[in-house]
Length: 476
Ligand code: URA
Image (cartoon, rainbow, N blue to C red; front, side, top):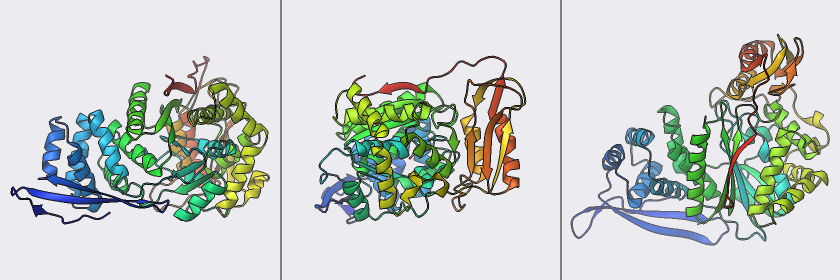
């Protein structure tokens, strides 16, 4: 990205700023350039307008994002504007424009060279969420290309990159050519998000993180969708997590986020389905990097009669339907067949090998890293499991070494928790509730306190929330 002539006066004497926005076409078809001229762009004016709920123009939003990206807008002004957005929100048109401008702040990928549809899936972040490891190979086995850019764990939520990197030898630092080659040859690959993908989001996210402005629905929409749109897939499936372990704590907020993200995708000509799924409890039984890889391999080996397996089959079927592979019933059958035939497991092995990992893990789980210490936590009373607070379980897993407390922390790939029971299960005193895995006994001691509070046993059978709350698609 470069700025051409930072400031000039036009014939009428107005102060003009011209921006040359360049986006590289990774397929090698050249560089797309757009010159944007903004007269009298002042960040203070943008802050005032948002503070007074006056919508910004498209040109103002483009200039603001450009200024954030190239550093010409100082952090204190950006932070003030972010706080104004947190209080007053943005209009739908502003949110869509912010998303597009952030998308265009870096490289925008294209997949025109593929002979089939390119699809992407995004989860807004949760605990025990290993769906990408299952969904990408199923989609690839059914002829859908899935170029996936992912991030590391954030706070108490896990990240696909950390999970995959627990596989011996596997790398997610894929050069663009290697990523493209793998997508063409295998059908799916998961690469670490590069700094060149929506760099405006990198800057804005870092500021939001330290100014208490993460929790704004338009800002979350722009952050997620700018990266999704820059990745270039035509079909986007959004898994919007809702509940204690998610950013969206209730259905109304999750539905609003889903609506805005779908609108941004539509404005960019992409098809998008959003599925609201429960995050009041962890997804599946394993939380922690290698433990989750183990569970994902289990599903691909055919263990689908559980909440995780059912959700992944549903997500895969919707992805196939959106991408034009058939009606809902046919796509459901196709997704199930990809698992039962072993084709999806084979795709996972090919993807692991293509990313320099040991593909034998798909046959021999003992090749995955294991923690040195473990401890079983048992029920201290009879009753039903009324709650498994996923946020607290996620935080306990960080204490066990499965996540980071600071950016610089390293992860223990074998650390985490395996649940022995699920919400609603009847338990008796002494029954195992879960097993903790860590590198040392002190970590187990620390996490045990949190986990005891996270699992609540009550005398009455609790009402169960369905795993899928709502689906927003072009059919609904
Ligand atoms: N994930 C993102 O990438 N951005 C957000 O703002 C929230 C979750």
